[in-house]
Length: 195
Image (tube, rainbow, N blue to C red):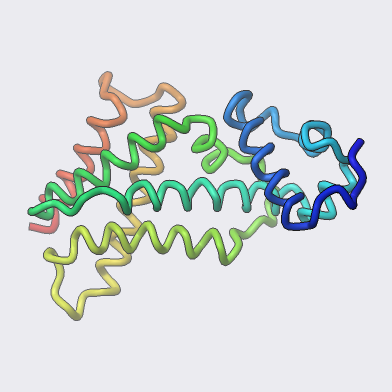
């Protein structure tokens, strides 16, 4: 086993999060345990608990990184001319990212947090950044004094996309629709309701 002095705390945290992501990516979120993570990084389980407060903290930080990567991916989508194209491109970006990182996205949805878990400020800030992308794409649909409603609508749209992905991952989308078509339908329904 490696000694504690082999890595700085920051290096050890990065190593642990990178290794946790590798476990989730290759084996799924159910395979991630502190024991398996400790073995992978060459330290003890006790060291893992010196890096993370508990399993909730590990999951929160892992999921925050995933949501950050989703935001960076969606932020790189070139601007489109119309609200419909902007929103559809964002929806397609979400589907493309989530489909390319199925197990990591499954961890965002199904990580086994305890009942007392509350998302960290860092996680909430990343979700807010994603919602701001939706708000930026739909700004033409709202009056300047409707910012609170726009943000609420963006949160509802985000939650709906999240739900569609959960159903698709479980193979429970009705009428044979695929993930991309369902998310596109949601974007169109939202646009029709705002027109």
